[in-house]
Image 1 (tube, one colour):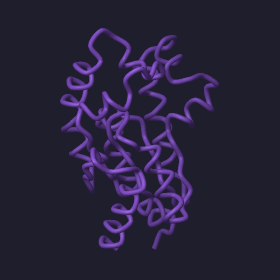
Image 2 (image 1 turned 60 degrees about the vertical axis):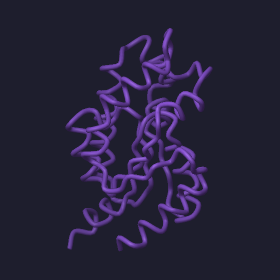
Image 3 (image 1 turned 60 degrees about the horizontal axis):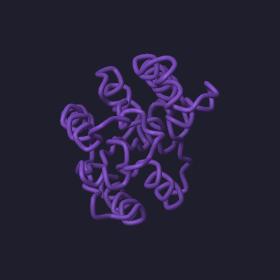
Image 4 (image 1 turned 90 degrees about the horizontal axis):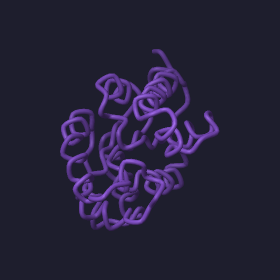
Length: 179
């Protein structure tokens, strides 16, 4: 048996729209399962020395999306087990959906647009929400990404009414059932 392939399939990947709680849930899940957690946005910021909003502004969204894809390619080859929180737009690319599924169990943290808006209003670090109608932008983006999220998810968890702790607890139960 190829140990590296087995280990990669044990990874837990958290996907969902910005503000769904991927980073917070990832940290709680990491503590509960004693598995390291990584955040693709943070990894990209560390590598480039730039904030995501600066990358969007200076290099454009397409360049950022290519950085995400390259990072997933690398991660898919790593042998150790971890939780990975990915950027909200990562699953939009078909190649990324394939890479995510190859890496491990994909968990979609599903959230309503109104919840995202309430959580993120006033957050100037979210480049896609800087405009006259952030709620409308959230609704349009979520609708356009819905199929991508659902098509690569092994598990879908509705998170609107749940704290990060409650999400992590539910996910531990779900993951135990799947063993």
